[in-house]
Image 1 (cartoon, helix red, strand yellow):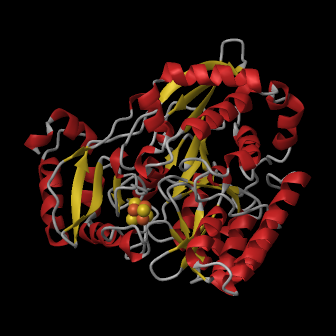
Image 2 (cartoon, rainbow, N blue to C red):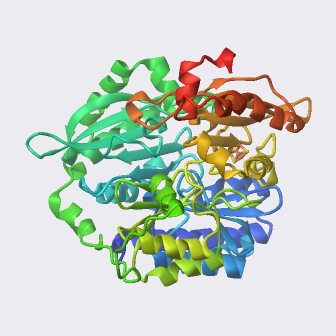
Image 3 (cartoon, rainbow, N blue to C red):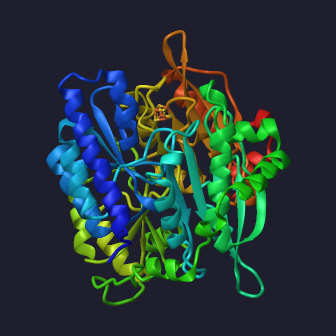
Length: 523
Ligand code: SF4
C-alpha cells in the first residue's frame, strides 16, 4: 500500500497528460517550433540535454515503494538505457529517453501514483523531507502541500523555481535551510504540533541560509501561510532578471518585516476557511502509511566481525536507517540499474525506500546482519557511505547543456585515486560534492570539500571550496573558495594539497575538525 492520489487529483493529472499528448502531436506535426514547445515540456519535467531528451519524475519526499521502483526499472529497460538516475533533489531521471514515447510512459506511471508534472520549470518543483520514526510523520502534510501546489493555475508561472523542505528532527540530512521554504515540525510541552517556517534559503549563484519568518504557528494554518507566502512571491518577485528572481533576493531587498506585512494584508483578501487543515483530511492520508514488513529478514542475530561493525558505523543512522550507497566505480553517482532494482524487489514485496539528498537509497530495517549479508552479496561497495568516495555529483558536461565542465570525470577520478581503504577510513566522514556549473545542483556550497566547474577562455576549469557543512540546520554554513581555477590535470595536485597534512596528522577525528582548527591558509 502507498500514498494514493485522491479521485479529483488523479482526474486533474489525467487531463494534464492528455493535454501534453495533444501538444506533442502539434510539435511533431510542425505547428510548434522548439522554443514554443520548450516552455510547455518543462512543465512535464522534460529537458533537452546534450545528446537526447531527459525526463524527471517527481517523487514526493523521495519516498518510493518497491513496486514503483520496479516499474521504473521496467520503464528504463523498455525506453531508456537500462538504468535510473537518482538526483540530489530526491527525484528520479531517465537520461536517454525518447520523447516520442513520453505520453506512453506518463500514462503507465500514473497507474502507480507517479507523475513527472512540475518537476522542472518555474513552479513548486519538489518537496524534500526527512523524519525519524521516533517523532510523528509529516508526510501527509507534504502530500497536502503537493496536491495544493501541483497543477494550481495560480502558481504555474512563478518568477523562478521554488523548492520546499520539511523536517522534524534536529539532525539535518536534507539541507533544510537551503530551500526557498523550510517547514520545521515540532511538538510543544502540551504535545501539540507546532510549525516554524523559514524562507529565503537557496544555493546556486547566491547561496543563502533561510531565515525563520514565522514561529510556533498551529499546524492547521500550514496551508494558509504557505499559500500566502507563495502568493506574495508570485506578485512581487522580480521577473525581468533571471538571477534576481528567487525568493531569497526578494527577501533581501524588501526586508522580512515588509514581507510579513504583505502576508498579513493578504489574509484580508482571501477566504481563509478553505485553507484550514482538519484531522479528518490528514487521517485519510495517514491510513495509507503502511507498517513496514520485512518478510525477507527472518532472524535478528548479530555477528561480530570487523567489516560488519565498520558497515554499522558508517551506514546506519537513527537506529533503523540503512544507507545503500549507489556510487559504483566508473559510473555516475546515483545510477541504479534495472538488475539492482530487481534484486531489491526480491528482498521484500512491500517496503518503502527513501531517496536521499546524497543520491543514495535508504532502507528502513532493524535486522542489520541479514540486511548486511544480502546487500554485500548483490551490491558492490556497500561500505562506501559518508566517505570520500561517496561523493555527490551532478551530470555535468556529459549530459547537461548548462554545464561548464565535466563533473562525473572528477567524481570517477577521486573514486580511482582513493582505493586504499586505510586512507579512506582515516579521512573518515566527509562530504565531497561536485557541480558542473554555478547552478550548484551538486551542492558544492554546503560540502566539506566542493568542486565547481568553470569556463575560462573556453577551457574546462575547476575551483575548490572548503569548509561548508549542513549536519545541523541551526549551524549550517557555506564553504569558502580555496583555490584559483585550475585545469583537470592539476586536480590530483590539489587533492594532495588538501588531504596530505590531514592524513599525516593523527590528532583530528574528521576533516572538518581539522579544517576548523587549522585555518585555511595553513592547509
Ligand atoms: S550544476 Fe550545472 S552542470 Fe550540473 S546539472 Fe546543474 S545545471 Fe547542469
